[in-house]
Length: 196
Image (tube, rainbow, N blue to C red; front, side, top):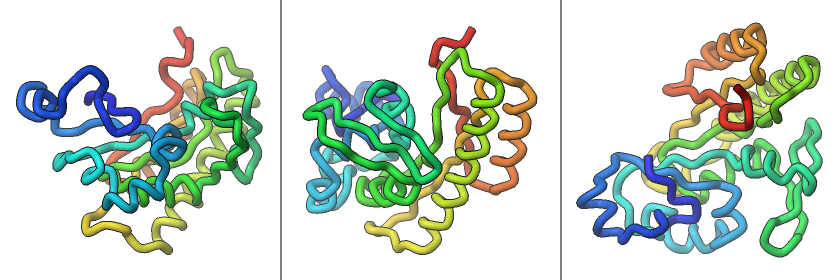
């Protein structure tokens, strides 16, 4: 899955991407696309597919990892995450609902639920609280998608994200909760944050 963070796979011409690399899917980044080029521009273009002339699948992450990486520039609470843009320092607020709406505007085929990516190492109690909040946020994501219409003429599939840091019991508990949602696919979060 090539990474097209802001609607382009860097260093690869679109023809080469389609004909030689030939991936079935590429990855876009909700946080970066929201900040630049911005969802209003993507909507005017008819979504990211048309914006980048891509007729295959696109998956967008929720932006949770990018917000995690802004550790000194963000505040997390039950409602969502307040953060400062890495571009201009402007303040923004992501909620599960707003992230679903942003991903509706982007128009990715597979969209990720908004979650909190915990750091490593992470205290057990923090990991547990974060996991439960991620589960509550998932319910809000599902709720929002059920109440809002699609923006384009195709369906979008929500993938919930398993969390729980490196604690086996929390990972198991999270996986069981995520499986109970009955989504078409699931993701495993909290990897590549320095864990062994």
